[in-house]
Length: 260
Image (cartoon, rainbow, N blue to C red; front, side, top):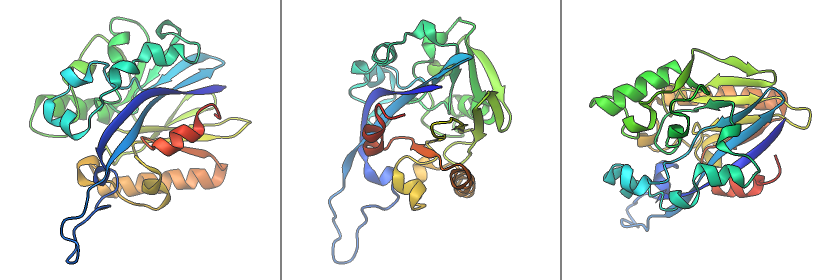
């Protein structure tokens, strides 16, 4: 089973989004300098003996024009057009037509913006039930989150709805990790040459997982569920000595390139 990290570019945003109160005013320094930082955007190509799996579909290459202006202002994916899905797949020797299965960890606009490639096809798209419900509610009402675009997922897709932890294929378990969103999915990939745990946006950066540093309130739907999901991943890591992959950590992304 071969794993390939796909480079989908870089989002730039305030570090406080990922590390709550990383930069905070105090009496002696009431105007601290904020940190505007890089966040990696990636997908994962899993070449399994039974199927070629794409984990997430990344941002729409036209993010600057299709994302709501306030969202792009807060989390600018300026190079999305330079790191489109076709180019990212081609860089590791694959094409969109090679994909047999898509797994959407969740349906935020930086993760589901490439689903249009599978519109009208029979390629199964796995998503958790709570995520699909929450995405439609959020995109079409004043309730829910603000990082969902109806156009990303309201199309002719072959949805396969996940209700709980389940085996996707031999050696690949899908894990329900609510917290960042109600239906966030991660995965436990069992391999002879080392297990991999996909934490995804359960932990934007390493300190979220390794130190239990909570993300900012705009990135956490349910704090108690978030902490329970982190403990669930920690338990699996202890039992399997797996490599844990975070959602947007640029240093980890660079270090893992070509090593999985």
